[in-house]
Image (cartoon, rainbow, N blue to C red):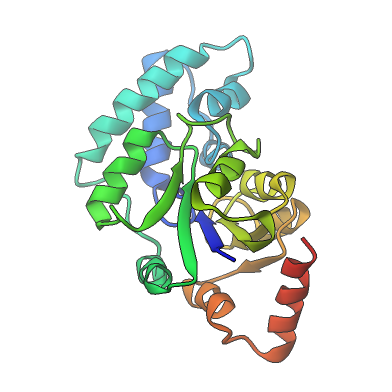
Length: 233
C-alpha cells in the first residue's frame, strides 16, 4: 500500500513567524486597530485567513477587509530582505530523502493560499516532489478534515497508511477527524502538551527525530510504541 506523508507548511516546514506577525500588524494598523500580541497572533497560524481573523476580532469584525490588507502586506514583505521564510533546520533534507524513496508519497495541507504555496514550491525546487497539495483555496479551514480526505484520494492512499505532520492543534484535530495518524513537531506555534491533547501520537523535537521515525532508527521501545499508535488508527 502507498504510504502518504502530509506536511503542514507554516511552523512545520517553514519558519514564517516574523513575516506573519508583521503582516498582521500592518493589516490592523491599516484599520486603526491594535494588533494582537505576538503569542495571540501566532496562535491562529494554520487556519485559513478568514477563520484566523474571525478568531482574532470576532464575527462582527472587519474580517474580509483585514484579510485583504494582510494579503497585500504579506506580498510586500515577501520581497523585503528583512523578512524571509527559511526552512526549519533539516526539513529540506528530510523531504528530499522521503521524495527519493519508492514507498512514500508526499503531500501538503496548509492554511496558506495556493499562490503562497506555489511561491515556496518554486523557491525550493519542489515542483515534482508533492503528489498532492491542499490549500485554503481548496477546502474548508483546518481542523475540518476535508484537506486530508482530498489528499488521500489524489495520492491513492488509505487512512491507515497516511500520516499528518504539523505544529498546531488544528493539524492534529484534522488528522484525528480524518482517521489519520498525527505527528507533532515541537518547534512550531503550539506546545507539545497541546499537540498531545489534540491527538498527536508523538511529538518530535528535531528533523533528525522525524527522520528516525521513517528510517527505523529509533530504539526498540520507541519504535514499538509508535508502531502501536499508528497501527491503532
